[in-house]
Length: 326
Image (cartoon, rainbow, N blue to C red; front, top):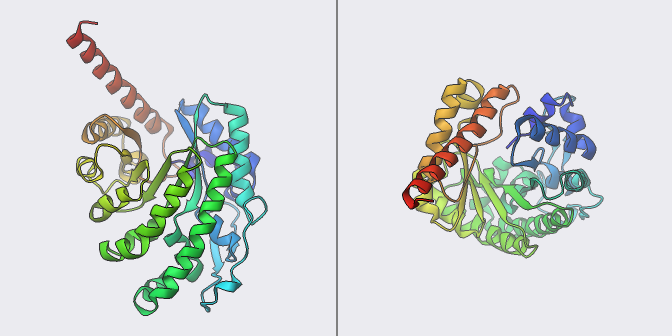
């Protein structure tokens, strides 16, 4: 889950990376080559859809984009939301074209996972402003359902456009949904997230689903969305996550991005990587950071994650060979 680390090591400003498909692809492919990764994550901020739908965004020279205005901050009139065409609206074409460029350069030799921004609930919160949107959950449930449904259609359309551009997998985040508790999640988040996941999987691609923070209380519901992979943040115990998600869903995670990857020693990163794989059961698991890799992370620490995964796989293979006599 690399954004700022990739653009920084490639010498590309955040503004340029977030608005230029060629630079985005260049940064990610450069990072892949530097670390011999298995694939890349075409992604930037989670303001792509909300911007296309009418929110105003400011792109600082070398920091993540920031909101200037929210389209529904002072209105519940859904007709003011902008119509969206993934091939021309806002920065949606940046993600689509970066995916296309990456596929042309990498072909099928590396896995290309592309972020189609956010799940419907989080997009709806972005359009309204999260604080106001949380109050709407109690004050005006019908409005909440209406705006989430509007967002679901856009997420699906955008995701399918990305699928057609050459991605091997689709992913989206739903961090706002991790803040509302289990009951509200089940009521407002699960139904339309489940619908969108189902529609995106019609493209034939697997769908990854990410919610930041400690999602233990809702992880079984996250599994009900139908996502093929749940991206688990570092606060979640992977052994417990496996129990809650079941054996048919892959898990991705969950090295602590700051305490371990940014500030840890290479030895600590290696040891924690081994523990993560063991906690997850060493099957149906993608070793990754729990959330985005910090910008100034030492490159050697990323290398140690990769080494740990290869070393453990080799040891398990060797043990299996001895047991079978092959």
